[in-house]
Length: 141
Image 1 (cartoon, rainbow, N blue to C red):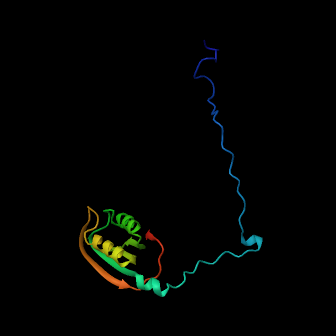
Image 2 (image 1 turned 135 degrees about the vertical axis):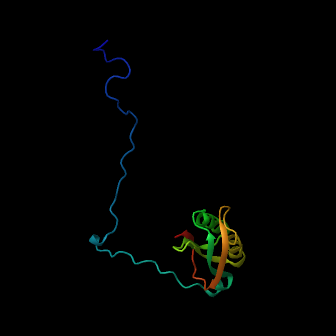
Image 3 (image 1 turned 90 degrees about the vertical axis):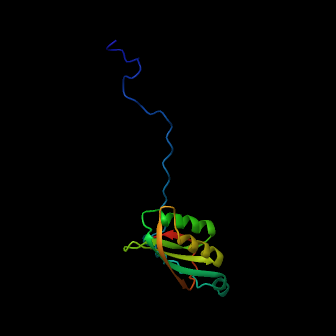
């Protein structure tokens, strides 16, 4: 019937699901409360034992190494092997990476970089040793 609103689909639709309460936001310390912003964390120098156990290498990989998941695969392998450092694309088409960790684990990553992921065509890998800095994680830059 035209005036009957008892059938399904007529009238406004209301959401009857219970709503979660709004989160409570508490202001944190700001300069307005008399506190100064914290300074960036300063990493202490590596201990002599750390320098003896850990190696660091910078590599430059050339060939078809961008757009083939080189950086992401490198990051996953570094995490799997407990290696710290970073990897990034360079404007000239190469990939640069720094590996820091136990010698055997770093050697595995350097060896992997010589062929890269399945879609990569690695032409050259330049390896340069460096002094360990005490990096704690692996990042894509």
